[in-house]
Length: 504
Image (cartoon, rainbow, N blue to C red; front, top):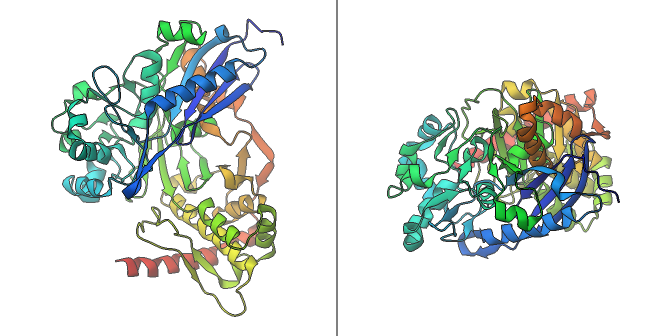
């Protein structure tokens, strides 16, 4: 193909748990020109240990970038900026030579549960956490991983010269700069999400020997560049030496940009193994619930987020139990009525975060001789997973009530039956973006914003040009089903109340 010399292109990187993905985007044409990915391996151990070697992220980024840039018609010298999205919360502790002192402990590592509980208590419980940080520490966050390293690996801990998150580490590899932005920093557990500043007193409670001024990265605005490519690396990658690297952010934050969720009134809901719900807010959300994480966005606003643990993980269990393929599973669900003839499922196979029942197991309730059918059990588990997300959405209060549209991503979003169910349960129109793997696209959009801001380009305009919605996926709430679901959801709430009473 012919090379368009005048094209201006941007690279988006998403470093997830399973793989690193790279996309090349042409903003003028509103097109994704190339994409590629490379897998990483996971170190799994007892007590919920989940770690990765940061060197694997770098190798995967190099491989995926090479493949994407090798696509026909892409002139590497036309690349103007790179944006990096990363899995949130991971602890990357480096020594004074920039080498990891220990493998990165990931968001899904649960080995630090006891350390997290101790930290929450030391900060004054849930109320103390909300007061100091604007959110409540969770085991997944970085704080308890640092406490764990201090106790279990004292020799490694003593060598710490800087503390980064996964996306910060890739920015450091690209630019040599140790910086971070408010979105990803929100998930550390030693950052105040309302004032957008490090909480040095909280940090001192976790790691008293470490000097926060020295080890914590410098905070920059979401719209500022982290730096430019290191000259030697630019030569090696075949890129121009003035390529900007944008601030980047956590995968939830850049996934929000990639779905165009950067103004009030939109909700992004992900139906993945686990589920997330987030909504853009121009001001901090003062949640009275420990379940709402008042994160900052990677666009200068806020992005309150809730996470449920049992979504497609729950539906897949029931589907496989009956030996059904996806098409047949959907047919069964469509053939059962709203409310599954009285069957209620609390699908907490993996414990649950929202509602807050970490020790919970799953329950199938209301079974009678008349309603035990495959169709009802299939429908009830999908309803139960959807009710959990609706329960989380309701915790957003006025942000949820003002929602004009839910943008659905993740594996479950491919199911028309599920899209309709979300629309009916939430009484809100549901639509899917064409690109459901939105974080890499969001990273490229943020890179373009960082590069073009000086010329007055807005992120809204960039999203309008590149975030395309799939009109065929639109599900409008059906008035009859909306009314029917009110009673079925109330039934779910009653079942939850009984479960909470048992748990306490």
